Image: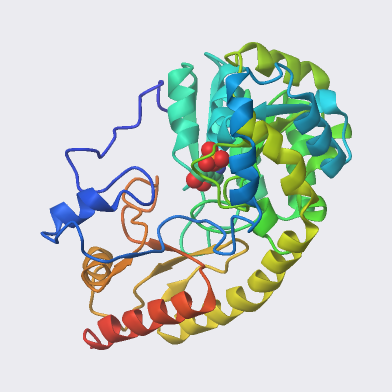
Length: 378
Ligand SMILES: Cc1ncc(COP(=O)(O)O)c(C=O)c1O
């Protein structure tokens, strides 16, 4: 168990940035020019977005910047509530999924948390910021599947559990029956369960089906966190939300600064959720590209974790004589930026995360991988 230690940032003393993107430092580290052309497979964003109408819509909203946002964001919360068939009082609008993570930690300040790893590093940072002690519960490589019995055995004395569904970076999804078993046990233990659903819209079913939102009525100790930045490709805008019972939402809201979400982002929620055509196009892209890429990557001899999200966790296979770091560097030199795994607990840099992009980009990635791996076959 770690006693609220801020996870050591590999930045700037190491070349490995904390999140995806951040290409400049990597280029400098590997001696490449700043204008070296890169295709970014390191950030998990929907390549079809943002929806085409967003840009015009944004310019029309500029006048609204002269006013403070409505303090309770009621229109946005109503739209989210309707989307999930909940009450607006069960919704807290947040400045990205990242703020929702920190608010969930704030609700449990100084308590004992567990985090299922490898997973998104912000859970550990949020726990540390709010002085929670953290126990890591590791999913074993290479399949990263959850053994619910050993998880439950590790939860004694734990007051709050963070998990990500589907999980970043493994792209694995804990199935619904397992989640229900976990929620039954944690209810009995008095352990809050915080499920980050940042990538739930990328599972491939309609979001309403995949999200655990319908379970909130049965499990008041469940808190769900959402990001709208991945699905709608708006990471610069910052938009997310928390779903929970009314009392939890009220308590979380009390930790949030006033006007935390800007006016433009808040106004955008309802039209985004109304855009069914964009959601359907995204589902069609996923249904086609994800299995195609799973097969293409596997045929290269790579170890590929089966994905339920818009990215893959891969590593060189037994036939390849190349380290993961060398593969990362060769891809970078050939214009492909992928996500290293040096700061994902339990991965130790042995894996790479690659985002699913549109078909031409995905084909380019496979071709470059093929060339690099061909050069290192035993
Ligand atoms: C699992 C997970 N949750 C939350 C976030 C944060 O999302 P946002 O950009 O909406 O703050 C990310 C961002 O990468 C993520 O990977």
